[in-house]
Length: 278
Image (tube, rainbow, N blue to C red):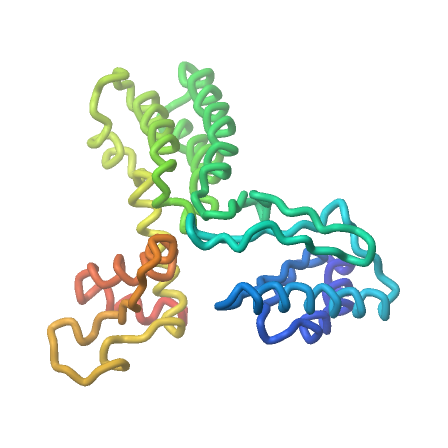
């Protein structure tokens, strides 16, 4: 931990070299820079400018950039891709990729989360196999403990980002297979009641729970309708839902979190106001 602490102090001034068109993300010795722009020419200019600034900072601090671990990922919609960009660092070309692993999540250029879901399916299948193997020797509570420590921890990591992806159905199928196994149900039996009896949330319920906790703990990021207008409507105390045309934004945690939170009963919304202070 001491090594990580001093390393963070060493690179603490790196964000100051980044231009106003970009946002740096620092995690120990792993640095990412998010470049945004409304026009393609601004985007290319900002990208090159930030590479030059980072290069200058590295040289002044006697550091070297590991080109084997340096890539750039362009986020785009089906009609919004700028095209192939040639980005260079000194005499080396920075490799463009369609997916990249960031803090255990595999992020793709269209935020479909397909690659991330594909990557955790084998791990969940192995967890299912392990539960099947030990089931004859374990009591129900022990099987639930194995479920939460082995399968649940994998299934819920980062679920706030990929939980509403169309590809998440494959994860839900594995979860139902495990629940049927624990509850001694047949392959075609409904497991809806088993979820309730075992006290286990379904994948989509777990996703909603993650969204609601995100909103409750970060209320300062959201506006109420009363902050935007003065009309005395029945929804005046709801969180304001921003106008959004892009589906990828509507499926994001911020937008989806507001929609989920606004559907809560009033008493739960009021109690959630105090979560961030606890």
